Length: 195
Picture 1: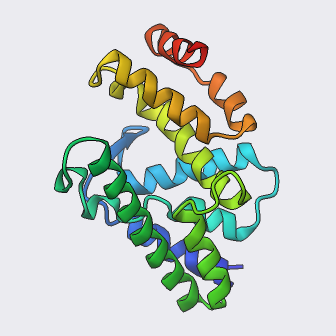
Picture 2: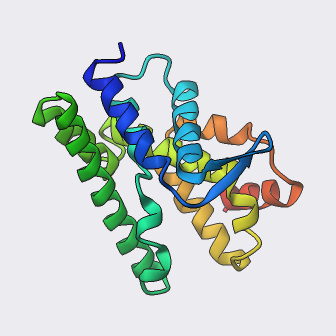
Picture 3: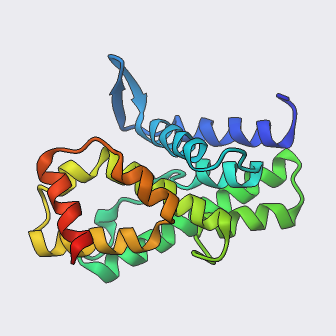
C-alpha cells in the first residue's frame, strides 16, 4: 500500500501541509494548521461518502494546499477580491496536487480530473467537485463559523450562510444541521435558511 501512487501522493500532500508555519492546538499539542484542516476535510468525506474513490480523496485532501503562502490580505477587500483570491488558491492547489500525482505515477488524465475537482469545476454536476465543496463548507461551519460570525455584520453574514447552503448537497445539509453550535450561531443559520 505504501508504494502505490495514492499512498505516495498522500504522503507528499501531507508533507506540504506540515510546512504551514501556523498551528492549532490539538490535545495539548501544536499541529500545523493546514495539516489539521486537511484531516478535518478527509474526516467529513468519510461521513459524506461510504466508499469515496481515491481521486476524490486526494482532491479533498489537497483543497487547501499551501494556502498560507498567498494570504487573503494580498488581495483587495470585498467580494471581487475574495473570489479572485479563492480562484487563484484553487488553481495553485490543483496544479500542485496534479504535479504530485503524476510524480507518484498517476496518468495525466487522472491528475487533471483531480485538479478540476479542487478548482470546483462542474460544481453541482461533478460528484468529486461537489464532495470537495461539501467538505469545505462543513469544515467552515464546524470550526470557523462561530468566530467568523462575530466579525461580519448581520445582513452580510446571512447572505454568506445562504450562499454557502446553496452550494452544498442535501446530504451535507443534514450533516451541517447536526453540528454543535452556539445558540447565537444556530439562530443565524436558522434565520438564513428561513429567508
